[in-house]
Length: 115
Length: 112
Image (cartoon, rainbow over all chains, first blue to last red; front, side, top):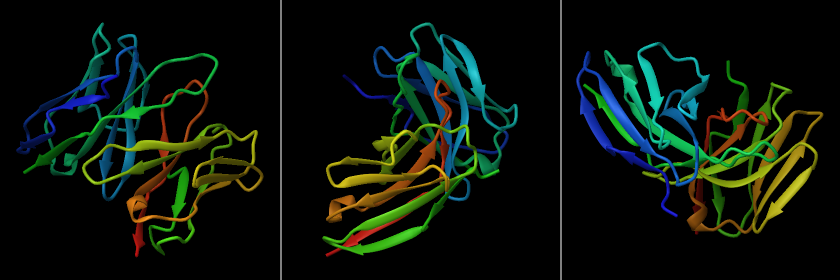
């Protein structure tokens, strides 16, 4: 099975611009979660989507948004970019089971640099 | 609010030695505790995980010890090898909730 794929792998933007990142989960996985990783704040949960619905949201401003498509692929969007948005954005997918814990598989991430 | 505290921030261990990383959590609703390993340029990969109904879980050279009353858990890497050099993250979540709360990470370096 192919792993979680994220595109693009690297991105450079300037302040005020917007950006869209894409994530393709492992085949059969219906839950997609997004995390932001920075040296100062570590790994922080952004949001989780399941069946095209946002089920959970972290403590990030409304400039961060996402969506999920019917094929479980997900995108996240950051509008009005700030310097502090420079980070590695990680996507994780998991199968959803009601009887066991769901292992999350992470993609390689998209490295966003805001100048 | 940091709900999972991890220490040490960095660790240097000689080849063949035991590496120990500790985590403490605050939220008693957490009931699943995974450890992730991350190499530069890669996403985190699940190493081993434990539920609070057991006090220890071992997979190969990796062992998690769990102390529910103290709300602490730790990762032990036996016979540490240079290939184990990576950043390790502890995490916690609730059953049925995909949100992982991560510790701040430990950069492990194994020296010959």
